[in-house]
Image (tube, rainbow, N blue to C red; front, side):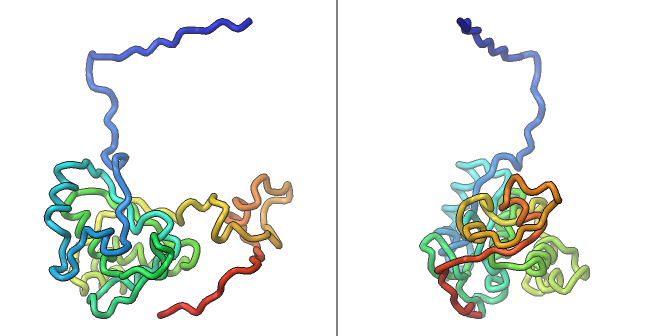
Length: 219
């Protein structure tokens, strides 16, 4: 019969261990509904109590935007510029429209205030590569490097925001959204695909969906 082997844990006290990057310690910052109630729309600023609690009570080496599943429908261009010209985003925690009060610039200002590194999730499900590339340019481009970088300058923030980490989509392995259909054709190497969803993602293909609601975007 097998014999249990005791586990030994040794703690070295002779000196500090390897440094852990601060960005590993972070959290989601949800854009929906005024940053989930953290943003005072009337005063156009984050509530001081929120900032105080975030900076004094929580260590935030990184902040992720626009957060979770809402990122899969997030149209960032709706959420820049004057508040009066912004339009609702189509998805949120309630699976309905949500005001675009807190957008990329409000998130960027939060990075400036906290010193956190930005983690931004590009909309993979309903967005396009061109929209994602423009988003990167808007947030991180140097003045004069692109029309979108210059748009950020015109919107009031000359310096690029600190967003070193970009994600393509959110929970793309989940059995919903664009992976919930029936594959019709799947690209990939001649040897075949161990994972159909992964091959669709990497090599392309087509998928059929049945009984899915189809609407006209409200632009």
